[in-house]
Image (tube, rainbow, N blue to C red; front, top):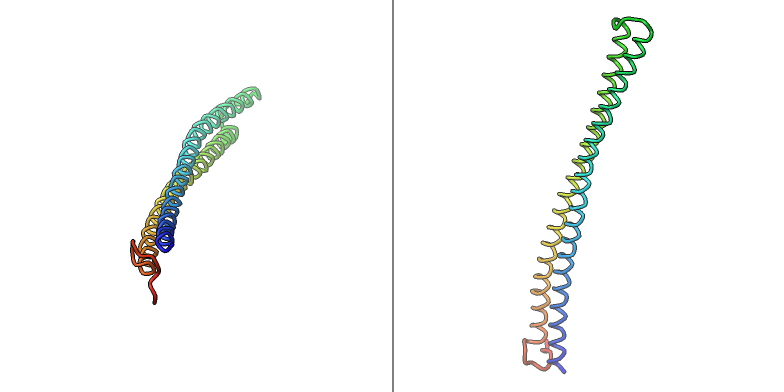
Length: 159
């Protein structure tokens, strides 16, 4: 019965160490998956930036055309305060465009940063679990050896 108990104790140590190792591997795999999702978000934001740029360019052209049409239909010439108002509107539209692009760039950088952090977290989890599993093997293995004295013994050592 002692040899069987000894073998079960040793198997338990192995399973515990494997569980720690596997936990780290699973955490690293989940982190890589999350990183891939963050990378995809970053790519989507880049596409969204291009679409936003096009949308603002179209809006600016439309605004410019509407302003010229309004001024021309009023019978006034394209000078003075009308030109200043039109220029101010176009400048404000360009500022709005740049602000929207900037905000999307910030989102993209945050997604990229999250992707990198997710990978680092996975690496830390893997390293931690590897160290933990080795530590378990060493400490529990030493305890097992102290208790059972190695293979072939039939009873625990007396202290």
